[in-house]
Amino acid sequence: MPSRSKVSLSRFLIEQQREHGHINADLRLLIEVVARACKRISIAVGKGALGGVLGSAGTENVQGETQKKLDVLSNEILLEANEWGGHLAALASEEMDDPHPIPNRYPKGEYLLVFDPLDGSSNIDVNISVGTIFSVLRCPEGVQDPAEAAFLQPGTQQVAAGYAVYGSSTVLVLTLGDGVHSFTLDREQGSFILTGSNLQIPADTSEFAINMSNLRHWEAPMKRYIEELLAGKTGPRGRDFNMRWVASMVADVHRILTRGGIFIYPRDLKDPSKPGKLRLMYEANPMAFIVEQAGGAATTGRERILALRPERLHQRVPVFLGSRHEVERVTAYHREADA
Ligand code: AHG
Ligand code: MN
Ligand code: MN
Image (cartoon, rainbow, N blue to C red; front, side, top):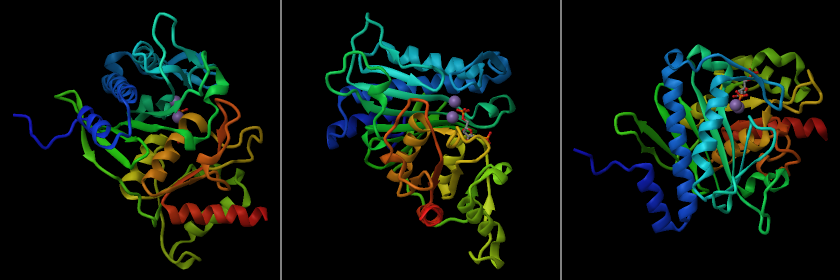
């Protein structure tokens, strides 16, 4: 017998529309379609070697990264799911050089969708959590055929953002600008069920997530911050810190949303042409929106991520996000060093 207390994603969205007027029918459809696509990706990820989806696709994306079969498949699943519903004006993704127009045979809507179809590609073949990240913007008024410029809006303009993490369970995390909510995929029923409302990231933490192998390439304030954490009880921070690094941003952010922490992918001096590794439009912005909505903070080490004016669809930025007091501290170290 279905439990009356279970709230599905569909019911949650309808109630948001009805009671709070946060969303309209098109935005609701958009979120439902993205969630359905994530369900399909979750199934493909779960099949692993049995589905023939592991390994490289033998192609490169616009950023010169080798695409995995699942990167390409996930991108296709999201495209196919979102093209025909009439809710979008265009889509853009990590795996496509340019924005993807809505084919002429379908009606166009008022939203733009930008996504990282499969985040954590290096973890696909080793059975470690990966995910999907998405951000929803409004198509600027009067724009008929949105190209790159239409997408270049600051993160503060996002109307929704979310991610799905394909871990030991599949969880969809969503913000519509009014708190952060999580939904666990009920694999028997095939629906996402609300399992967390108004998630909050504790302001303090003793856990950090960073790829330490890049330490020698970091800027001075970044080295200072980490050295202080590593010094533990006898150092200036007076307590021990623990480290976790999954190397799938979705999984690291999900842990931080669950129990706090700070996630950092800083600028490094290894390749000065790249100001960080993560991409602003489909990694940093949606995650920053979620983290701020959960009471955390998100900066580039210097500025608030959501206030940045994007210059390119695939632009990279340094990312510092999570528990507010730690993000504020390391950001202050950078500002002090600059002053
Ligand atoms: P993607 O698989 O979408 O290209 O993103 C991978 C990102 C991110 O998920 C993760 O935090 C980071 O790359 C891992 O970087 P390292 O390999 O340097 O640890
Ligand atoms: Mn990614
Ligand atoms: Mn990706």
